[in-house]
Length: 130
Image 1 (cartoon, rainbow, N blue to C red):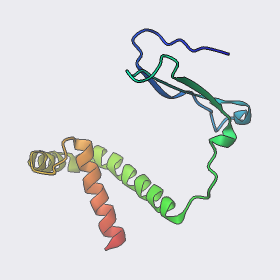
Image 2: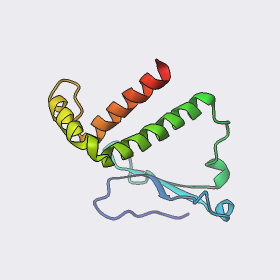
Image 3: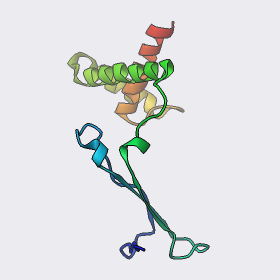
Image 4: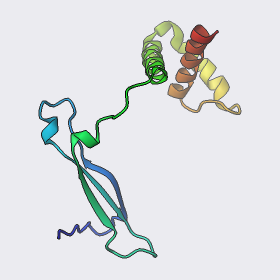
């Protein structure tokens, strides 16, 4: 039986150590290496787990629903709008002033990116729901 020895000072490992490149023509031959390691006063030193998973265990088993497609489309449209708004010289000054005015208010966005996402999400929702 194999034994995993983690470097001193590592208290937690959780997640994929290597992933499958799904776009590769050799994806079926690749495997994902998942690891978990935790130390706690109530556990022994042998709480290491390693898993190998193939592409079939990573591939989605249910079809994409209409609501998921709507959410993906909304994200794509808003993301592109935020990127375009950042580069639009005619809106930068006004956006910066509005951002500074709201950031210290209750519920205000603390970063310019979060503020622009809020603005564009509200705009998208008004156009598509109202």
